[in-house]
Image 1: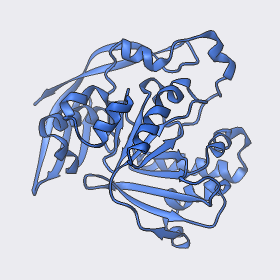
Image 2 (image 1 turned 90 degrees about the vertical axis):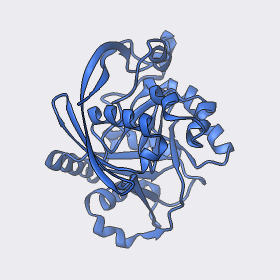
Image 3 (image 1 turned 60 degrees about the horizontal axis):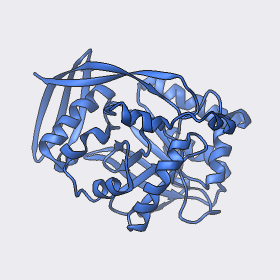
Length: 313
């Protein structure tokens, strides 16, 4: 979830602006390097109606505001970003549940917790997972299932493109028996249908129902879908660009590697531990051009975004 400066008016669609994701595809935008950089992620299982309550930050209680101030302070103090996702539970109306993902070998490690608290106590979940994890002993830890979780943005009230393209993708994945979650806005409207995949930590762009299935089942090679990859959230943006090249070289097995990176200007050093070996890859990641792309389906303003190329050193 990202917090908006202002909420788009439903009437803004009457201007018949094109969907931002349609324009992004038409312009041939390469989405690599646009994944947020997350050291840990909390997923709140909240009914869809609660998503809007949480986004109305002007109505937050003082306690809820303090939680976000503390989270901002945490990021400023150590530079470690965090992800906050809202996903609709399998059954509406239940008590508060959270899924907490932390960086680990091959992406992220998942732990599940539930409590008797109502969903309106979401600030407590953020405090206990991201700020005061020792308090998780008061929650009931549940066995985490194996296999991938696919969080598909379907938040059409934030951007119509996410509703138009995200809902069919989520439906197809769910009907195919995959663990897919209807998920609130996490940024990147212009990449609809966009999804976050755990435990791999990959973010995807411009998915169709058919492509989403093939990606989830690994029925397609990384080289064939490289221009649908926004990046690995465990690395900073320029390192995501290099990491994609290594994924294309080594195939899906590369996702099992533990990867960290340092970035010094355009020079990226990616360290890895994989298949019993440790090593480093160095490359220059430089701009290969810029595009003016819409950031929203509700506003005409365009963003100036970079496109990248990689030169191995």
